[in-house]
Length: 177
Image (tube, rainbow, N blue to C red):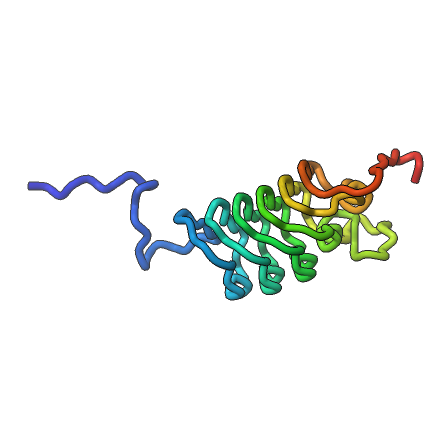
């Protein structure tokens, strides 16, 4: 007889001859912390680790993913503040952090928005900062009371529902600046 037909492209197994993808997506739930070795994936452009049972803080090495453009860490048990090294993720366009136990302030993300350089920058240079335009950080314990002042100028999408907010958040018009 003749050999069976080749499976469709979406069902083919990866072989040594198949070029590697530039992203990582894990499917099977995994309990435990995200290993610091994640920082050695220097060519990574997309990282989707949602719904995997990861626990604990993000390692400092996470901020070494300099080419990362899209990151989904939602629906895990991550906790604590985002590491300061996250301010190095200048290529990051979309960040999904929802449904975790993250807390603290989002100051390190302010440097990732266009026109928002490091804290203390006057913001005059439109090329300052990074590429972040979408932030999904709902259902955590972030202090989002000053979020509009720090991030809203550069974000197109911002979800921070059900977090910690203290004080009054005031909207500013461009005319008030």
